[in-house]
Image 1 (cartoon, rainbow over the protein chains, first blue to last red):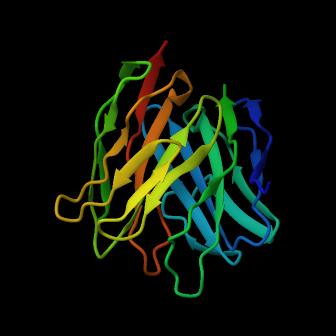
Image 2: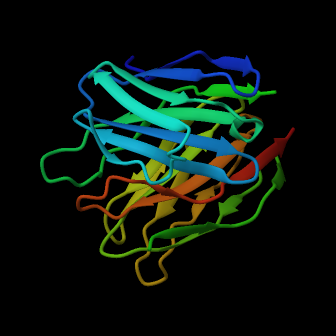
Length: 118
Length: 113
């Protein structure tokens, strides 16, 4: 049963510290998404990649957030320095976008990383 | 731009009651439509989808029909169970080179025994 995995599941840190969240997409998927979920804002798309290339990171605060895919099996989201307003659940999702570029298939979500910044 | 509007929650029902969660959308082109479900402490899971007008998506007793004329994709279930308690998200993807899903704000459903 293929699944998206995320680590860590929970992270508590102090303001100003660097936070790195990791995601392993489903093998064979070529698109990876990062979302943030809060009570106030709901589910927000931060960034996404296709074939490891960043396609859109307009939802991400550029000064402190960065997203990368060092290889096809690993996506990372870093926050440096972290702030209390970054406290949220961060989800990674992966999907397969075929050559015609139409996302008719689903995105598969990981269990999330619950981040608390004190 | 694309947008999804869901009925405000929370929704509280008794077991075996009928469920409707309304969803309407605004999109360019011919979007694909989705319902996702999020159980407590978990990520979102696809519940059902429809990729063209008049398609009906169904899964686990839930159904939704893609209505282009009313730009709606309402979720229904004839008899809910306690285990259906979760947050339900309506979403769309407008296709083309845009891979993004646009989500509604979610509707919390609580089913009491």
